[in-house]
Image 1: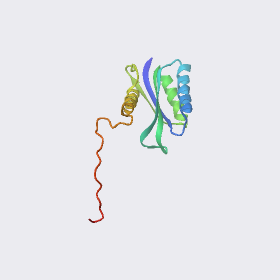
Image 2 (image 1 turned 45 degrees about the horizontal axis):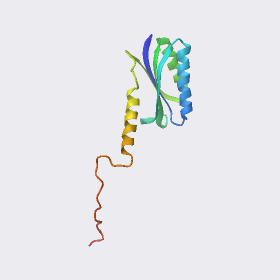
Image 3 (image 1 turned 60 degrees about the vertical axis):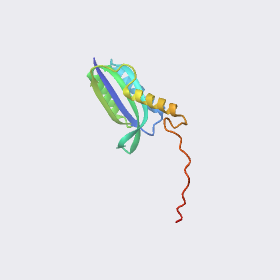
Image 4 (image 1 turned 90 degrees about the vertical axis):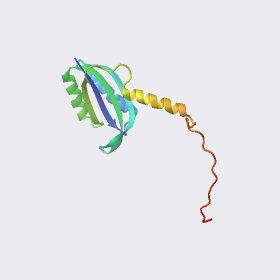
Length: 138
């Protein structure tokens, strides 16, 4: 069987539970047709580079799949029919990534940076008080 990464973007107005249901539906399609989902990642609600079908944001979901080509064709057919999915892409890969994907590592790193800052200004010194200037013409 071949290895694939399937990423789809769901509409921004869906709740996270509905997005999870879309991922479950995709998993069910694959499992029912003798395929296997190795990993599912939800990257959350992210901004799009440009508007797609009046959406500025979308829920990103990635599935790593071990399945024959016919199963992937059926998954793409079902995904294309679903009105909640605004874009999808399936890519055949040589090997599946171990551990979290690059997108998940990036979000973890960003979260750590935000927690390190917590109210502080990081390495920047505090601003000193500057005297106010009057610009009334004097």
